[in-house]
Image (cartoon, rainbow, N blue to C red):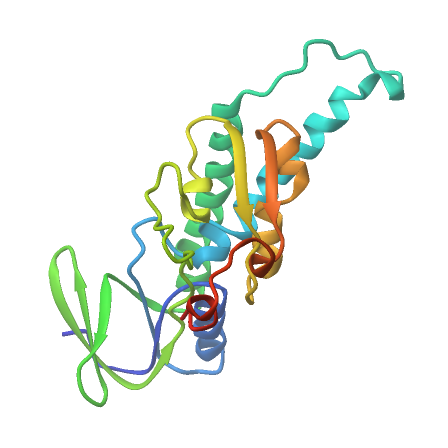
Length: 229
């Protein structure tokens, strides 16, 4: 069992969860935070969405500028992408920011972090199943900030190879040849847009791309689509 009772336990450390935990701690509450993602803290935005896509987008912008360097009076011949180096830089940025939440922001605000899968077990009880077993947290309040997950098209299940989500896209080991992608519509639409930005898709990070802007225009799913959860 954890040491004493917490005023609030926040499940999830994405932008909603870790910010809420910090604010609660700043208001004088005793705060616990739970995260199950082995990749670290920060949620979809930091680990696989906003931050890594912007890092890749910056590389794509620089690459495009260098291809037209002569227009600016700069001689830069044989400009090429080192894809492994591009992805390594992205990973370094993500890891640094993720560790900053845990090692700086949480410690500074005296937030207790529990790593593992959380479940609610009656009023005031949260059980966290981690590598070393289960830990019982006594808490007055629980805040759920469990984040998002990819939504698939009916009949097109993700296989991690030919059909991928943003998760796999952020850990590709080689450049993509041809890519057919669907824009998402959600609270993360801006970040999904970054992932599918033409500058990423056409400036060296993939050789070509086609886009489905509106599903209804291309797929006759009828009631299946309308009832799609």
